[in-house]
Length: 123
Image (cartoon, rainbow, N blue to C red):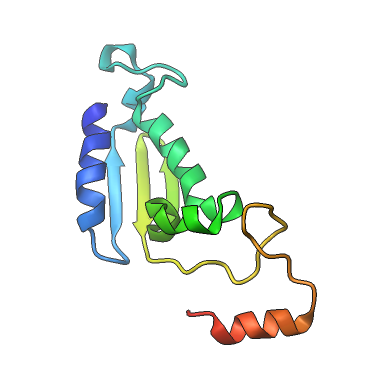
C-alpha cells in the first residue's frame, strides 16, 4: 500500500494540468495480507480521505495556508470507484465568494464588494 502513496506523491506533480491519475487495486487498503484494514492509518484509502479534506482547504484554512496547500490548488476532483481512485489535476483559483470564516476569509456584505471581486477574479 505504501507503494500506492509513494507512486502518487512522485508522479502526480509531474502530471500535466488537466491530466488524470488513476490508482487501481485500492481494495488492498482493507486487506490485512497487504497491510490494510478498515480505517487503518497508512493505507491508500485513508490517504485519499485526507486528500479530500485538503482539496477543500478554501473552506477551513487561512488564506496563507491555502496558498501552501498543494491539493487545494491543484486537485479538481477525486472520484472513488470499486478498487479504483481517479484524481483529476487542474489548477484552481480561490473561490471569489466565501462562506463565513474566522481564519482570514471575508464576509461579503454589499453588492459592490461582490462586483469588486468579480472584476478582479481570474478565471
